Image (cartoon, rainbow, N blue to C red):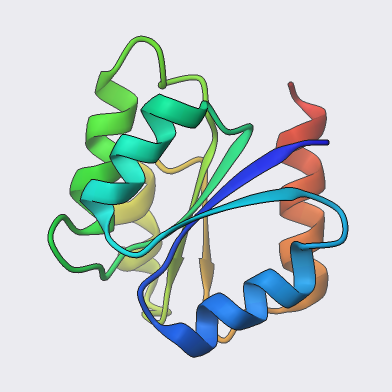
Amino acid sequence: MNKILIVEDVELNLELLIQLLEDDYELLIARDGAMGLEMAAAEMPDLILMDMSLPVLDGWEATRAIKANDKLRHIPVVGLSAHAMSSDRQKALAAGCSDHLTKPLDEDILAEKIHYFLEMD
């Protein structure tokens, strides 16, 4: 079973992601970017869903740190953000995200992206 690390601090968003994914994937949960970075290194997930607005270490910096680590850089990171501006997507991609989705999440697009990145493995 593929392992997905969800890095999200908003309870409602986290609950939605868990409901959508728990039947098909092993889920790991981190509530801030620093914890997400630690869990990525310890658990080596197949995919990371990274909220970009996080406490302690934001998603931009956490993604940069993941992509700077030789052992982690192969893990696809999908940035999640409530910001829908094209500049936010570009900023996420520049930080190292493999893709960027805006909230509220479209369940079908999320499923497509997850399938796409896990099939690449």
